[in-house]
Image (cartoon, rainbow, N blue to C red):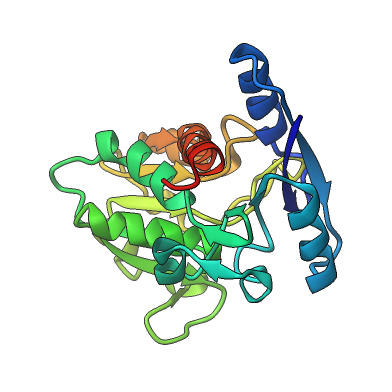
Amino acid sequence: MRHYGIIGNPLEHSLSAKYFNDFFAQEKIDAEYALYELKELTSEGVKELMGRLDGFNVTHPYKEAIIPYLRGLDPSAEAIGAVNVVYRGVGYNTDYIGFLESMRPLKRPYDDRALVLGTGGVAKAVCAALGELGIQSTMVSRHNCGPIRAYDALPGSGAIAAHPIIVNCTPLGMYPDIDSCPPIPYNEIKPRHLLYDCVYNPEETEFLRRGAAQGAQTENGMQMLIGQAKAAWKIWSNGHL
């Protein structure tokens, strides 16, 4: 039997084990997928997992922190600066693929700029995918830092109106903290906006609910999850994308 899993903290929101174990059962693949919630990431811990597992996913907050413990990076993961799939000690980024493929059919003719909420590994993958779609992205965080905007600088600045796409790449609103959401001026959102949440549990986050109340189009992260998982399996089963 082959063994796969996901590392991160917390993992109570994750549907990855259900997705993969259902897939293994359906395809009659002798494999299992488990959750490995790690309170901290260490070189010894990563080495032990690489010896025990045939491949694993990486989620918040370790997508960047794991890089020094790997033997190498796939070119896409190296360019993005974040890893969400590990195979034979090499890091890959399939978040990029999952977001790109889920966003492609949603893109409208006037979608030229996006606000990306967050600056972590998911945000980096999303920005790379948006760039491939010809969409300029601006990251938003708690503090201004170079090209990164601060949340408290958004209200009344015209930034919401100027960016028809807003992507949440933070864990805000993720189960069980379902009442939280990124602190943006939701009253400035219009029906021409598309709000995309990389969170998929719950199905409708507070971020999406507030956007929908303003008439905006909304999309959760389920298709991104499926797309990145399919790409991860391709790596684990074929040795490459």
